[in-house]
Amino acid sequence: MTSRQTGHTRDAGWQIGVSKTVGHPLEVVWDFLTSDAGTAVWLGHGVRLRHEKGLQYETTEGTTGETRSFHREERIRLTWQPRDWDHETIVQVTVTPEGNHKTVIRFHQERLVSSDEREQQRTHWRAVMAAVVAGLDHEDS
Image (cartoon, helix red, strand yellow):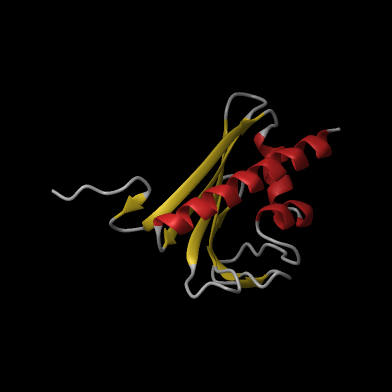
């Protein structure tokens, strides 16, 4: 039996996940994440999320991809490839209600090529999560 390193799977390669419970109802969180301002925070500037499967996007920073699935108030799954990468990854954003006024936000990325890239993306998604929380708190004030 082969042991795998933390964050490595047979099917999805290297992956990373970051989650946070926030003090906002699911609808508020979803509306922010799918708004132009919220999308700029977690995906990149210049993107209007497309709800239809297969529609492509490109951020002003040069990250490209396409929507794989879009389930309102639940999950967005898309491919994600920064300009300077030679491979695409899969990013999934999920929201789950936690009681009446809290929501769990999860960013999950798979198909990373190495443990080093996984650690870089851990730092990236933690910063993104902090920015999303700050954006939600700002929207609430």
